[in-house]
Image (cartoon, rainbow, N blue to C red; front, side, top):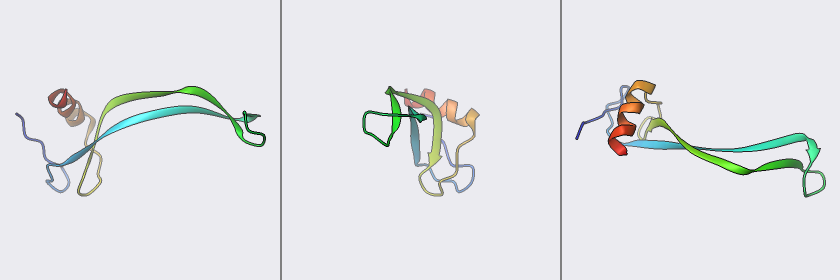
Length: 72
C-alpha cells in the first residue's frame, strides 16, 4: 500500500469529499409559498478530492487522483 502524507503538515489522515448538488431557483416559488423552487432529484457524486483531517488543507489534484485509486 502506498503511503500518503499531507504536503502541509505531514498528517496521514484525510477526509474524502463527496459532492451533492440541488438546483435552487429563486426566480420561482416552490411547493411551500414564499420559498424558492427546488428542482430535484439531488445529484450526488464523488470527485477525487481529499482534505487533511488535521490542518484542513486541500490535497493537490494529482495526489488526490492517486489516493482515489488506492481507496477504490
